[in-house]
Each structure stands twice: as structure tokens, then as C-alpha cells.
Length: 497
Image 1 (spheres, helix red, strand yellow):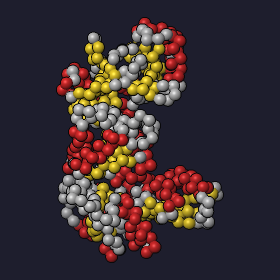
Image 2: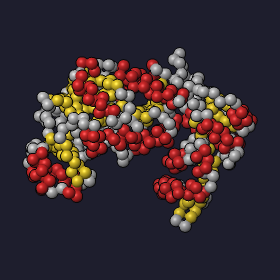
Image 3: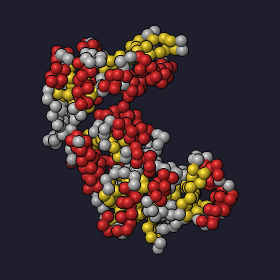
Image 4: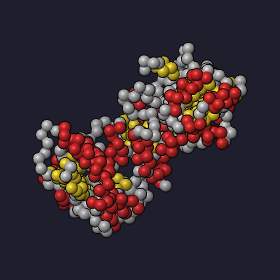
């Protein structure tokens, strides 16, 4: 079994467990051993007895960071929990969670009590949500949380780190189970002859999403591709936020938005030094069509004629100007719509006013755009500045968009044609590459229209569809291999950089 984590202890006699797959080292040996360049950083679980400033535990985390290892806790974590005044800001939110849990308990604890939080798990499973919240804020391996009574109900009196020597015999099994869960070390070795994985990739998805960017068949092919490339691919959900640092990289396969958890996942991954697709900057840039239009216009890349509208300066005079410049029909769209949602086609003044009113309720600025009908839209998939697939998405039958969102909530999508990138028109691919370069170096889907006037960029998607039988129809498994290999390249670039 490959070693994923190094456990640092003050005294080897404090360690009483037989857990395979972990390197055990004393603090003295860790502090004095020579730093060597490694292909991947070691994940250091610092279980020293004390973390006070300039103590052995403090220096173990400090030198781990200097060696580009990944310690838990970090020096920032150590500082955060060094004094109550430094973490007091977080207590009101944690106490609200505590009260919510206690109110729902049939038999709540009486008086003051203590909770042990080991690697984000709680010794009292009724408080697992609180433990996850605490672990997300303070990533210590071992914490003791003391709860008492205050003027307004239960209050958290203290959150204190624990040393390994404080893990009593009664907590021993709980410690081992929590550590195994965190480090993903099973009690039995895997059967079979497959070599152990080198890296761990998390894929964020929502099993209940109506129009996910990847269907389950595609997600299963990511897992299959990872096995062949020695990458453990695990599907995670919103509830797994606290586990994110267990992985080496993150792939978002849930529709992204600035104001939901997908953006928080991306920011957390980036802050932890993990490759993430797509990164927070790409999400910000792609999810707002106003930004996108400004960027494309500044570089003179062709787009349908577009006019931004300001809610505070919108009146019938503005509508008359739209009629002169765009004509009917015209498109009005919300800046952060996706999957053909948040768009209206208006063919008279009354419908323009009606659509604008609905969209302005959601956004200060909206876009008016000339209607440019084509029987299909191009989608060119771009990864790290290189095209990886080319699709034609056909308009839904009898509709002006590729997805027809019905009033009853159902959807009807048009057909598609997938082809090799080299078989797509060169001018379409070239324009897609130029447009994607304005956003970043991640995974994008560039939508374009082509007619007798030329090729036009419609939008750039930070989270493009990758569905089995559609985008992978030509490349098949090679599409997933390509994406996994790019993650490997990025992980190793960070390791050696």
C-alpha cells in the first residue's frame, strides 16, 4: 500500500495503533531530517502533544509548510486557536448550529458537556454536523469542545486542540476509526493486482440536478479512466465540503454559480493549492455574460450585436433605440443564465417591456442582443488551450433554442452531431481558441454561430457538458483520459514547482 500520510508524534510510545499505509515518525526525526524534492508533497498529520508558539508541534507544522508538505494543522490554524479572542468571531454561528441540534434531540445532554472531534468526526454522532462545521473552520486532527450554559442558552466555552497522549483508552477505537476514515485507509488491504493510486481526484456533482453538466454514465467513465491512470476518482457532494483537502484535485461537474456552494468548493480548492476545473476566476468570468461581452468586444472578437441595459435608465426611449439598432425579433437575457434559461425572444415593444421587467427583477444590468437564427450552434471544447471536441447542437424542434424549457418544468433538447476537431471548420475552432484564452487555461465550452456573415461567439461556458454518447461520441474513453491526464500534469507541476 502506498503511503499517503505521515503521522508526527512527540513520543513513539504515544502511538498504540496498527494502521497500515501511514508513515510514523517522531517530531525530532521530522524536524532534523533533510528536506528532499518529492514528486508529491507529504500530507503531515501533526499529533504532537503541544502546539504553542515555538513548541515542537508548532515547528513541525512550520517546517512542513516550508518543505511544501501539507500539514494539519497549519500554522494559521495554530494561531487561530491559540486564544479565544482570535476565534470568538466564529462562535455565534457554531452556537446556532449547536442550538438547532439540541432542540431536535429527544434526550438532550444535561448541564455542561464535552465533545471530542477527531478528524471532523464527533464521538457523539448526534453532533456530527457541528463537528463538520468546527473541522471546516479549524483543521486540527484532535479537538475538544466544551459546552456550557450562557445567558441565551447553550454556549461554547472553549475549543482546544488535544495531543495524542490525551486520547484515552475509551477514545482509542473512535480515534482509529476517525483517522482511517480521514486517511481513507481501510481495515483490509485491497484485493487484486492493480497498483495503488498515485493521486486522488474529487468530482463534485449533484445527483438531483435536472440538467447536470455530466450524466452518471460519463461520471462512471471518469472513474474508469482514473483507474487506468492510477488516479482514485471519487464522486463527492455539497455535504463533503470538509473533506475537500483529502484530495489532490477537484473537477466540478455540477452547474456553477457565484452564489452557491460550487464557487466555495472552487475557492477552497484553489486556496489549498489544488488544481481545480474550473477555477474561481473562470467561474466569475464565464457566469456573467456582461463581463464576457466586454472582454470579447475589447479584443474585437465577433459577437452578435449586443447592447447592455441598465435598470435605472430603461424606458420607452431606450426601447426605440433597441428597435433601430437590433430590430425584431431581439433577445433579452439575464447575465448569469445557463442551459438556455433566462432568455426571452421579443418580437414587439410590449414583449420587450415585459421581458425586461422580469429580468431586471433579478439583475441591475441585462443584455439585449440581435436575434441570429441558425439551425445549430457550434460547441468547441477547450482544455488548457487545446481543442478536445467539436459538436453541433441542433435547435429543439419548433423552437429557437437548443433546449426548450416548457412551462411545466420539462425540457426538450435538440439533436446533435459530434465530429473530430480537425473536421470542424478551422475558422470556428480558431475563434473558439481565441475566446477561451480571454477566460483562462481551464476546461471551457465555447458556443458559436456560423452564417453567411461569418462566425460569432455566443458565450463561453466554464462548466461545459460532458455527457456519454454526446461529447465523447468520437473520442470515447480518450476524452476522459485527456482530462485526467491534464489533472496529473497540473498536480505534478505544483509538486515540482
